[in-house]
Image (tube, rainbow, N blue to C red):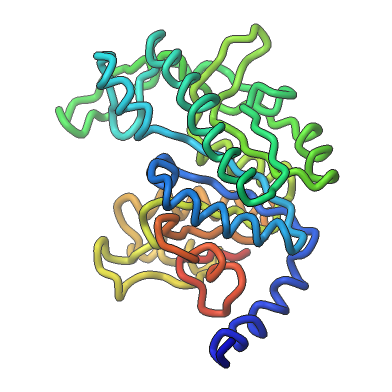
Length: 295
């Protein structure tokens, strides 16, 4: 082993000691899980985190795979401002893709690496208590007109119950949770995976919430790598918003994360889950790879 690799191990040691026994909530986007080779690589990184004693909950969506299946089956999809309208047929496909295909594929990849993992949806153990999202008036960016939209079987998180997750974590199981929830009547809802991951992180008082997508962090200027923010505090993020330095889609992203950190999560990270070793580098090195927001 050369000196450079040994130096990396030395750099990782204090982080391994610091995070042993702590809880990470890691959110996978559908783009992260669609490629088998990428998923295999990412699961190896999860296995290493798990092996050094970090308690892990994975939350995943699967919007890209849901759209592809709907197209193959001829089920028309309506997406308004990035939010999917979930009709009866789309809900059936969501159950198949989220709680079925993607969840099982993640579990199988973890099994290959010897990780004891349990596949769940937000319905198991009443983890995600949801309510149907009421019709909302939204500005349709395509038409420029305001209209009232019924999003169908889309839910909002009312409450998170982490009792089952606590039991699994205490017994060193890695939980893999798909983005479905239900109400008291057993009605199933399609729920934004980012929202579920954030609420679970708060309820578990997680050390980290890590959002894996196909972008490498938050940029002051879109598509300008030199403007990527490596590390920022809640106060600095709020300053970017109030000064006008943050604009467009960056504003709600920063607002959501700062609100989350104020509720007890120690740090949040946005990294590119399609880049090999991005997760390990973000957790175990000083420089990291994405954007880290700290309280």
